[in-house]
Structures are given as C-alpha cells and as structure tokens.
Amino acid sequence: MIEQLHTFDVELFMRIHRGLSNGFFDWLLPLTRNRFFWSPLYLFIIIFCIKEYKKRGLYIIGGVLLTFALGDLISSRLIKPFISRIRPCNEITLADEIIRRVPCGSGFSFPSAHATNHFGIAVFLILVFYPRWKPILPIGLAWAFIISFAQIYVGVHYPVDTIAGAALGTSIGLLTFQIYKYIIKRY
Image (cartoon, rainbow, N blue to C red):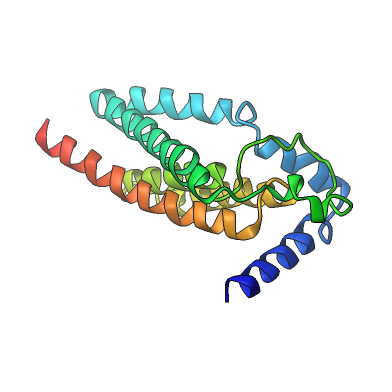
C-alpha cells in the first residue's frame, strides 16, 4: 500500500513538474512561492485590519502570526525531521528528470511548510472575514492552492507533501480561529 502510494505520488509529481511545463508557469510559479512576492498583500492585511478593526485588528494579526508560527513549528521542526522524506529535487533516482527552476534546499519534504502555512493563514482569515465578505472563501483557497501547486511545479515537493501540508494547515487555521474567538469574547 505504501509503495503504491509512493509510486502514484512520484508519477503525479512528474506529470505536474514536467508534463505541465511551459514558459508562463516557469515565470509565474517560482514567483508565487517567494515570500517577498506576497509582501504587498501581507502589508495590506496588516493596514486593513488595524484601520478597519482597531484593537480587534491587532487580534486578527496576532491570529495570523500564531497560525504561521504553529504551522512552521509543527511542519518544519517536528514532522519533517521525524519523517525525513527527501525532496524530489534531491532524490538521486529523479536527478535526470528534474527541471531546476529554483534552488532545491537541503531540508526535508514532508509536509510542505509552504502549504501548511498558507492553508493555515487562508483558513484563519476565511473564518474571520467570511461573515462580512463572502468572496474571501474562493480567493483565500485559490491563493493557498496556487502556492502549494507551485511547490510541486518547481520540484521541491511531491503532491502528497502539499496535500498533507494543506490538511495540517487547515487544522491549524481552525484551531487558531477558535483561540481568536475565545480571546475576542474574553477581552
């Protein structure tokens, strides 16, 4: 069962990484996984929360930071060293197949911290803002999905890594939203 899952994962990875290869994706997707690319969005969220929500906005920003911190801690510091899955771009058996679109890095692959963090933040913000602004649901999920998909396309994660990261991030986003709700009611 595990071997079949691994075989499927590698085959799906190659279909995305090589099979969808095109100039537009080669330009766009490495950008979307770069934290500096999204800096204007992060700055907008901070300014918007403070301007529109005042003290509650600070709690929202705190929730985003807590979501990111938990996601990074759990995915990168706890799970990755325990699982120790080699990134596809460092996998010797795939060396001739990998297209080097970004530097590979030396860390482990499972789960994707990008997917964990971005799905966590997206879910948290969706839960906070959905009652007042319904379009955040598809926008937030699309944002997290594109970043996660880019991880596969550039060759640094397998699909299962990003799926697990998305599930972990979603759980963390749900948890931090519950903490946020508790704090809002309490203070």
